[in-house]
Length: 357
Figure 1 (cartoon, rainbow, N blue to C red):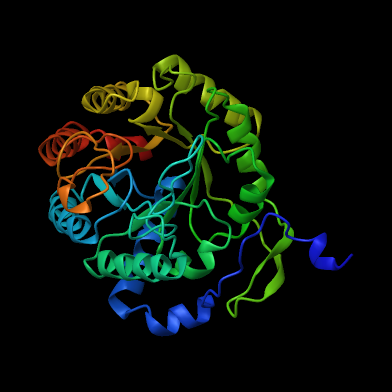
Figure 2: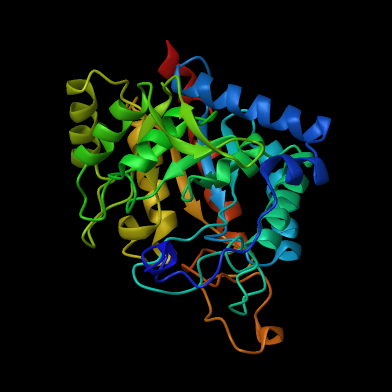
């Protein structure tokens, strides 16, 4: 019996993948994009440190599948971001990796052509190209850190990272987060458990050593310093919202008990809107009202938004896809997005500066 009879029994192939260094050399970070990333990260850190009074909003498509529509959205969002920049820090939601409950399209990196060809090598380059283009507009980008190898390819283009509800409890993702160069939002568990997110923030704030890859694509022992900019993202759980004042207060208490800063982001989508996109504006309005009534812990929100409302299945004939419409979770349309952000900016313009006094 050979080693091959024991190892990789269920592996069909190992296809080559360019190293992070190779991909960076092919698609280098431009000066303008680098400036956007640095300024975006600094602004987010300042908000979390209570040095910047603004509310940050991570807003954009549930997932990117069409870079043309994605860039049209980005250009619209940049203009709106400039309009409300005195009150809101807008970060574009740029999600390439989609965790699935069972199976399904796993995102632009995994299957960029949406045909089960799984050209991860091409997907990684296309994702990097898209992030460069977004950042060159002057619009910082946020994403979900799902695959622990992807940050070596894309991390220099990200201003904010999320750890999803399915992975907040994962040691791998806590360790990875401890080395990310961005602030990291940890979502509560899919069952609504806040404790797993608090534990994740505590874990990620400390140094870790684990297996990963380096810039040359070689297996390496990664040794991190710890990330002190972890915060909680309330996204609801078990089909119930948790953005109400009682839930927010409970999250505050859990973070204080863990000797953590009470920094909370409310996800207007997922269970907080019962997965009904038309309810996202009501969630946003409620959060804005909480801040107007004196809340000091909510520092950000998340919105799933696209050019066109709703979502669509992926057809065999991709030419039949509706332009600007999500192929994953349903989103609010652009008109609703404009109203949500403009209304929030108007109602919070005179309120947010008072939170720092």
